[in-house]
Length: 272
Image (cartoon, rainbow, N blue to C red):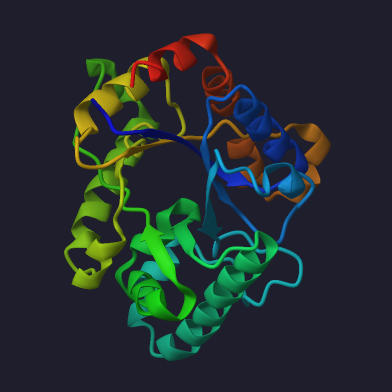
C-alpha cells in the first residue's frame, strides 16, 4: 500500500490558460500537488493560496526568461551543463545563483511560506553544480525538499522504442542517473518522495502512469507522479518562443489534461 500519491502538475503560473487548465484538474480533486513558475502570470495564484490539501513547490526556471528577469540569456539544459567548463564560469554562476535566490525569496513571500520545496523546469537542478547551489542554500532558505527525478525503469509496449520522445526521455533518464553520482551527499536529506514520470514525459497515458506507480512505490515513502495537464492555445502564442509554444499547445498536453481530469484516473488513485 502506498502511503500517499502526489499526482503532480508542473508549470503552474507559466500562463493564464496553462494555470486555468491545471486548476480545473485540482477542482476535480485529481491533481493534489504542483510546481509553480514565478514571473509570468499570477492570475490563479490566489485560487490555490492557503489550500491545505494542495502540495506546492517552486519550479526553478533558467530556460525561459520572464519580464525583468535578471538572467542575461535563456540557458538551455545543455549550456547549463557545459558552462561549467567555460573560462568565465564564475561570472555565469554568480548571475544564476542570484536568480535562483530571487525566485526562492519571491515564491516564499508570495505564498507566505517559511519552508520551501523545490524542483525545476526541464530538470536543470540535476546538473551537479546547480544541485550544489541548492543544497548549500538549504539552511539559509529552509529548503526541506528537492525533487529527485529518478525512477525505476519500466516500459509499456515494444513500440515505445520507435517513439522519438521516448528515446529522448531515455537519454535524459540515464543522464540524470549519471549526474546523480556527482551530487553532494547532503542532497539525500532533501529527498522525501519516490518519483515516476520521466520516461514518459510529454506523452503520459493511463498505462504509463499506472505502471509507473506500481513499479516505483515504496512503503516507506509517498510517490510523486509527474504529469503535464497545463496546455495553452493560439490566444497566447505571443507569450512563447516557437519551440515552447509547440510543446505547451501539443496534442499530448491536451491528452494529459484529459487524463488528469478523468474519472478513470480518479478511480485508480482512490485504490491507494
